Amino acid sequence: MGRVQDKVAIVTGGSTGLGRATCGLLAEEGARVVIADIQDDLGKATVEQIEQSGGKAVYYHMDVTDEPRVREVCADVFTRFGAIHILVNNAGITGAPLPTHEITVEEWDKVLGVDAKGVFLCTKHAVPYMKRSGCGSIVNISSVYGMVGGMDVPPPFLYHAAKGAVRIMTKSDAICYAPDKIRCNSVHPGWLWTPMLEGVGNASPEGPEAFHARIKSRLPLGHYGEPLDVAYGVLYLASDESKFVTGTELVIDGGYCAW
Image (cartoon, rainbow, N blue to C red; front, side, top):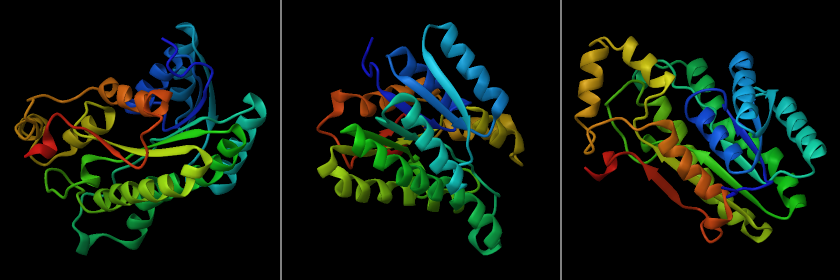
């Protein structure tokens, strides 16, 4: 207990799946958690769950592609709590299941807007407050598909491009902000059982059962991970336990990338 005691943490996309698990774990370990999302009912329910367990959390409606709102939320969080120590850039979407030659510019802009531009905007507006706080840890949620290509699941092109961008942005920011005692690392989850994965399976032309059997056959451990499996990795990178870790990639994938 207390691994991030009294730290102020902003988690984007914190209402469901990996984001929700991360918010709960950070709060359990003593952080004051700011859940930033566009799913208001789910976000408020996450706050209630954390508070019922004795943790501290607040909810902000925030679209990560809306720069004025991102700026406003970061400023309000700093005014409210007096610091921003942790930023978990978790918000993300998949996009249309199409190959590159069939993707529209509008679809490209939509996915890259959330998955890459959102990371840029949240980092841009949180960093000045981290500097004023004296230190910080930015944890960017990328994917195994930010490490390798693949045709396991659509859409392999938009999603991979966005998550690859997050991986390299992380390294650049790690170098840039190291003198300010702000660390920046990326986490690369493999196949986790989340609402997003459930939706992809249900929409698969081969049917959910065949889809999940095929994906699990690619995992050396033979089963999906759970959001909490990755949340513990985020906790490590957010905490002072990783004070000598920056610019690195934490792959949590059940062995997927070991093939």
